[in-house]
Amino acid sequence: MDQSRVDESRVVEAVEKRLFIDGKWTDATRGATFDVVDPSTGKVLCAVADASPEDGRTALEAAVAAQPDFARTSPRERSDMLMTAYELLMQRVDDLALLMTLEMGKPLAEARGEIAYAAEFFRHFAGEAVRIDGGYQTAPAGNARFLITKQPVGPCLLITPWNFPMAMGTRKLGPAIAAGCTSVIKPAHQTPLSMLALMGILAEAGVPAGAVNCVTAMEAGGVMEPLIRSGLARKLSFTGSTRVGRILLEQCAEKVLRTSLELGGNAPFVVFEDADLDEAVTGAIAAKMRNMGEACTAANRIFVHESVIDEFGRRLAERMSALTVGRGTEPGVNVGPLIDEAGREKVRSLVADAVGRGATVLTGGEVEAGNGYFYPPTVLTGVPREAAMADQEIFGPVAPLTPFSTEEEVVRAANDTEYGLVAYVFTNDLRRALRVAESIETGMVGLNQGVVSNPAAPFGGVKQSGLGREGGAVGIDEFLETKYIGIAVS
Image 1: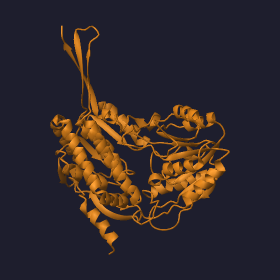
Image 2 (image 1 turned 180 degrees about the vertical axis):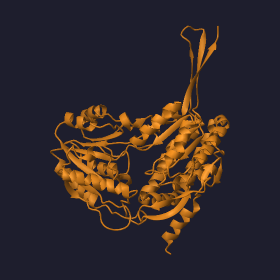
Image 3 (image 1 turned 90 degrees about the horizontal axis):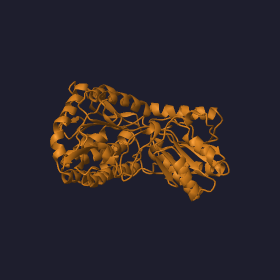
Image 4 (image 1 turned 45 degrees about the vertical axis):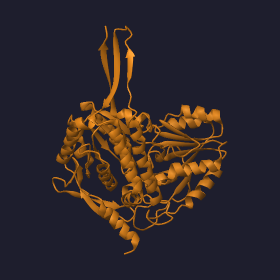
């Protein structure tokens, strides 16, 4: 067996496959397991514990029991836990990246980047832990004082997606730990190994038993819905589809759970006639091809001014066709597989629909035979606004180009969606840049850049792209309650 295969076996074998509850690894009560599949081969990597509703309840009860003591830990203690976890992540970046590539498919270089990005949330919120503030003021009548303080929300339910299996966990766990909230986290069934590895790191970093619990489950709803409705949890934080987010929001309404929802996107990417085309193409590659296009921030609708669309399309197709598709563990690979066959079939269907409506394929568009769920980098031009991909997240390496003629026209088109997560605008006209950035209905805008995600910035959307913000100085506020204490002085 070659060394690469030895390393793959080693990192998979090193991860605990059981549930992490109250500081201990435990089998599912019913003994059930489910398989984790390598999307580049379709082969099973291993089996992990499949939690039952009873296991979920046990995990939440552990979080509830641990909450009072964890809330009393000092901000410095919680900060130190996060900094230690940050250092451990960075020390083990190679093994963690390989593990992520095996279960999710992204190339090793991207996986290493995600581990660093994930670790940065811990470092960022280590700083925020010691900056939780309040206030003191005189009552308008002068006869009392107002003391304003912040307290942890309480036990939290955290649900993370498969596309960024480590970073979406640390983006939630970082502020929860910093604020003094205990939690139960449920990773996506496609990619549980990264989160299980993180549980070991958090325990090693000194996070006390019960403060963080992890349940892996094939059927998320059967485990998580009873917890949402139990009345024991005080908050839900979810990253995933808008469809599921709506369901969870309805469930949370019963007990009035505080909610943070980072949902779907339909990101417009706008290239004006005065843009630097090389810069715009590079930005499009970044915004479209990160994670093989399987990102809610991915450029989903690329609007290019009619005077430059042909040249932009030629340059983008040239760059996209030069990307190497293959197993993410192989040297030189830029594009890994999609997560599963259903994901690939969705992409194939959306491309067929667009071509059937008159779009032209500049590169890609044809799936080659073989193992794994691969789809080639694809550029379509002349995509009509009636195409299905204008309203649905593609979640694949497909760049659809649509021409426009005026600023007013493209702003209307960009806003013609129920989503509002992120937009990208390329122009060298400062006044236009500010006008368009303020007019587009999204929570984030990248001006002349194709990446907006940063732990130090508030990440989130408007409309049906979600509620609340993650990251930045405001990210910890989602896990804190504001309490006012009135003090009589006369």
